[in-house]
Image 1 (cartoon, rainbow, N blue to C red):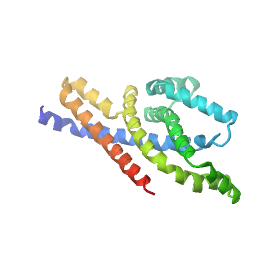
Image 2 (cartoon, rainbow, N blue to C red):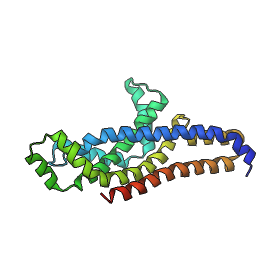
Image 3 (cartoon, rainbow, N blue to C red):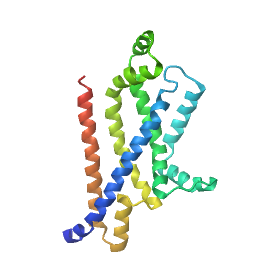
Length: 215
């Protein structure tokens, strides 16, 4: 292990790690915002829309993230939509994450006793208030730990963005290796950074699981 060589390249890896962390956070936020209304659809009563969403969710979860990213990267320009590489990566990663996030939210919402819906409806509360103030707060006990565990998969999934030249951690590591032909120090350091980022998410998942298991 050449520590001098490692320290020389560590700043570049840390900058790339910041890009990876930002991409992970942005994907999680966007996919969750999109998944919230989709998860509610058809939860109480099955509709053609809910059946279509369920089928779309199954299909999206069956397609590898890399394939989705390529479809966005090469497909959008075919219909006249040209996005910067970073925006393209964010769109592709978000599309892949939405399907998983929607199922996590639906599982949490289904864990709430149906009597809660009926009681809130009997009080004359509007639908948006029932979901926002009665159902979702109770469902968070199930949703949050699972959502944070899934965040680790999103973190690892950001590595596919290296294929479309996004300067995230995997891309920069490969670039340094190709220039120096010294993979050991660089890839070992890259793995350590991923472990560190993943450990933060895993710790948050464990803490949230303990927090929500004791109301």
